[in-house]
Length: 273
Image (tube, rainbow, N blue to C red; front, side, top):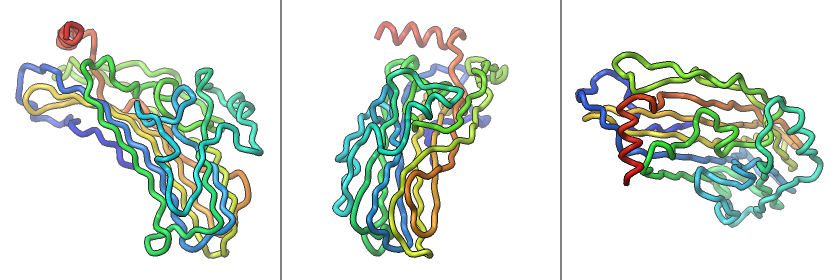
């Protein structure tokens, strides 16, 4: 998993006494990879898409079926795949997404496909978005992304820890704060129906991540991130709903201390622009 924090530099060496936070940006990355070591036939898959407010998105970018189209696969967005009670699963979790943030699935189907480098080609979707921001108040919410950013739904038996309390970084960076990083193992449902030889391996991997960054002084910067991903590996035939394993991560990095005079000045300045 690659999480880009681009200008995040936390090591010593910041040489300016004037922090002057500026150049605010948010970056999102989405990946979906499917790889097979042999041909698979009579294929139907339902794979969860990253959603926000019930809409498949990568940060501010709305996803469309055309983003997933290839010559050898049929693709379609589906709200309610057959054979699964999505509302029942959501009600079993300790943490519920906001009302209206229902899961969305990518349906993939084909009669026959061989997804490696020499046959039909590996199925690889990569969508990135870098947005320059006028104000740090527009940063992605990497502390509570489950409720406010694009994530995979539904998650099985998923429970978040209590909301973290902020911690000052240190006296040298009093305009920054931290949170205890959140790392939660998770299970995500996927549907994989196909026929294959016992030796054929199929791998499915997908991730969505978001990060914020800013520049300070002459050669220093800060940033933070979240990530949500799952993977599934199987040999031979597969029939029906399967459980993919993954990790939900949040509150990684450093954050602006908006109560500090340096950031108060930034907020006043950006409010006037």
